[in-house]
Length: 112
Image (tube, rainbow, N blue to C red):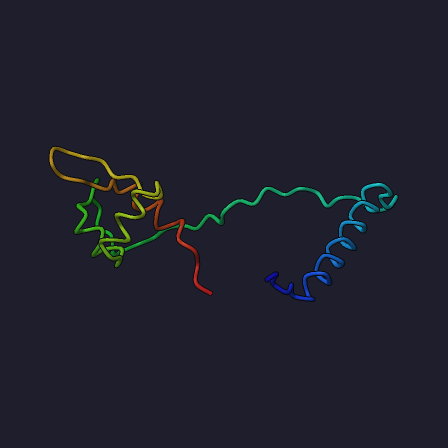
């Protein structure tokens, strides 16, 4: 027994066809006065990072970063695995260099 199709599907295809027709018309007959807006490269905002809570050290252990940045252990490891934060091995310890920690924190989105 064949299924009844939804009557809105035909209406949807009609609207899609109208949109395609408009796009084809725009491509075939561009407006003479319409200039594309200048392309601006979006750069992340550069913030001055003054974090007094981070002591002056060259590198931090994972436990120190979790405490200093107030993030969970799983979030920290996820950020490392996604390449957002660089971790280095020193013997059997995993360390985060101070410069990498500061750069990572500086890239955090600002609150609204």
